[in-house]
Amino acid sequence: MKRVTGIGGIFFQARDPAALRAWYGRHLGIDVQAWGGAAFSWSDGAGEPAGGTTIWSVGQAGSDQFAPGTASFMINYRVDDLTALLQALRSEGCQVLDKVEDGEFGKFGWVIDPEGNKVELWEPPPGQ
Image (cartoon, rainbow, N blue to C red; front, top):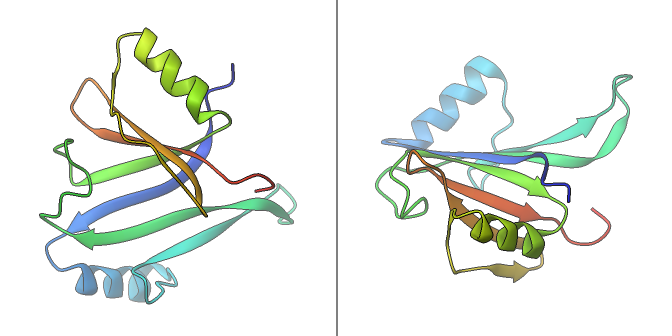
């Protein structure tokens, strides 16, 4: 079974998210949108669109978005078959959260790594 196929997003918290978003926009040229992040479109070696995006987003420090993890960041990994992967992780003794979300943006599940970081696993909707 194929497991992780790419990085779907990088999410982190800041004491002053608006100021940090502005800094990234001004100094690194990240086109931060009104929703608080940016979407980087994938391309191949020739610069042609490759059909995918990686999300980058800054949220408010102190929120429980990454709970029960304790880090100020969370990485979202793209996967082919979320249900099978979560089952495999459970059978391997990993701490898999019981909650799974299934909506217009795809299926999401979470596992806690050995350092206590919450890791998000994302199966995109069909065709993406």
